[in-house]
Image: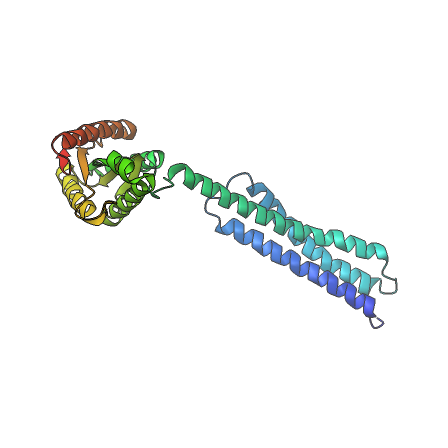
Length: 280
């Protein structure tokens, strides 16, 4: 075989670069498929189809380079060969674009899913997120034969904070309260903001007296750790209602009953002077 000229060298180098690009795309797609633990169903067929396509594209680059330079080396490389090479390069490029779009789509879906169950102000679970997590925890307690209890917190005289100091000050109080709840809750407890100034804490593994002890500790931490916008000796306080959950029943019904009972106990705490814990 005669020595390759400049055009042949460029042709082989271009084919090799496309082959490498196809292999990079193949590895990226394969790693994405292997590493995705919760890949949405819709893009999976696309990625599965890309695997053999990219493997074939990489193999074809080697064959075409050999065919043009070794097998038919006496033939001049035509302009059409360069044009077809551009189409060959489009395969791995489009595959990488599709992979990127798929990843961005998955990330957007994950953000939307998180937003659907998260309170944007405090970062705690919203009512929907808390309900879903609580029912799963109740079902686990039923399987394990363990008790569970629910605590509901409500900021005392919150309307006066909003009216007297403005809604930004009220929001700051809610954010600080959520932070205290998160830091003070036990591992495995589920916290959530049910709406307004009302928060909930599910305590798997605790009966009503045990949850009341947790609620009392958190009540004191809230009073000490949440600054009042008025400053001075003014204190932010919260009342709490505690109810044990009938874990032997259906999770949804047991949670609804516990929410109602804890809410009644919470109102009893308000009527009894606020800044206290009452067990249903």
